[in-house]
Image (cartoon, rainbow, N blue to C red; front, top):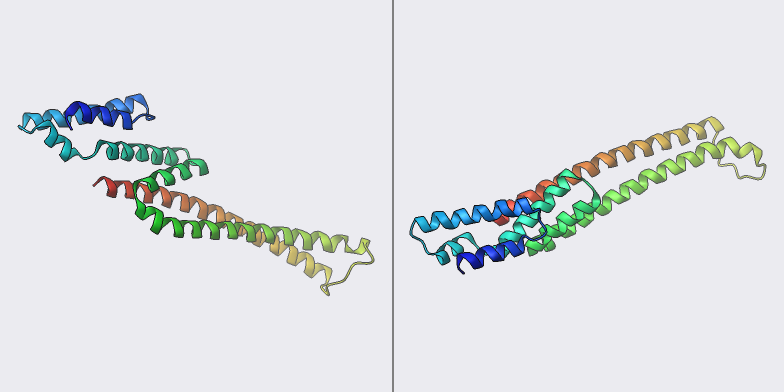
Length: 189
């Protein structure tokens, strides 16, 4: 592959990135060719040393997607970054996706438990308060003060679990971004 073919293939692969970023990348690769030619290498040798321009373009696009996810945290950007990194390696698809889905499932489970504690606490609290107005209710054997205290305790526990889940979500998001960056660095080497 000669210089023109290499640069054109790289340019086509970089489509979708900001124009100034594309120009910077192409300038860097033009420089690689200039330096290689000044050392007496042929264009084909330089192209072989630089690597496949399609893989290089994919790598830049993934890096851009990960940067976007880091700068603008949202589930949509995170999923795009994960899918972009998965496209680079079958290892990620097989080894990383399973544990990732397990962790996400556990996190959703913790959120569900947190919400159920809050709902149960509200039910216990207000159920005890309105019970005297409904004479046909079944008594569970708690004194009203105990049931109200239990309800408040469940609400507090649910709120604390919710706060903990929120911080776990933030930590997981940051960890995923770091893993994806590390992955890109490994693939680029």
